[in-house]
Length: 291
Image (cartoon, rainbow, N blue to C red; front, top):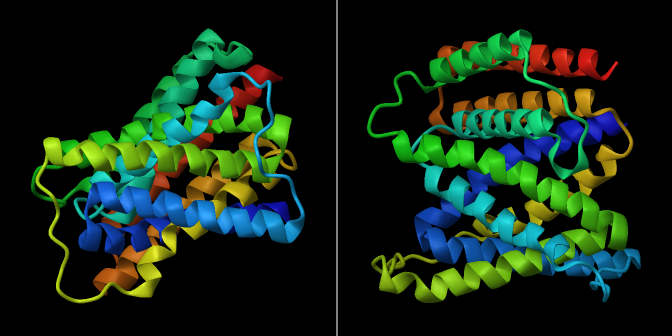
């Protein structure tokens, strides 16, 4: 059951990025970020009230525990910077690559109280295999891809950091409380950035036609992803969950890319397989070190 929930959460991530692509086309990056966090906050508020779960923050908690939402804002921003420049499957693969790299860094030095697991030769070759797979997925993209590729990798860094912070907060105030606080903090930061953004970039002119309703669903789907992920984290091994999330996101992204473009990308599929194998070897190495 929990494997199915993790797989559903992974596919929803790919779907959310696709939906957010419509939002950014209409509203631009900064206003889209505000809308995503606002819609997510509204959804998680009603979900919390409906379930009877506490969602308001407690007093006396360390301020850093509430910073997960600020970090999560940058995850959203980095994804929005990459959307439309490279494929959804590539965005997800690069983000997961960033997660792996940052996780290896955390393990190397035992950050956040984690057990030290030194970088070794197996992890090095596994990382090369994953990198080669992602490079193959990006073949034929064309144009300047430095910004979207860098943004996607950085989104992986922020995912790991915000996940760590939200996990600690969830242990203090529960899953719904952590998710609600995450979206509130993200909404505050995204609103501030939106207010000052005209000082640095031109204001996005809205199209003459009205927006479609479905483009506003990204925030709500993001809330569901947070809840499902928090449920699964404590119920299944990190090894299995990481593999399921990778497979669900990357290959779910491939399906969505194929439906949108009307054609199947064999190079993206082959690249995704190699990237998955590289991640599998990395996790095998981590499991062997932990034994």
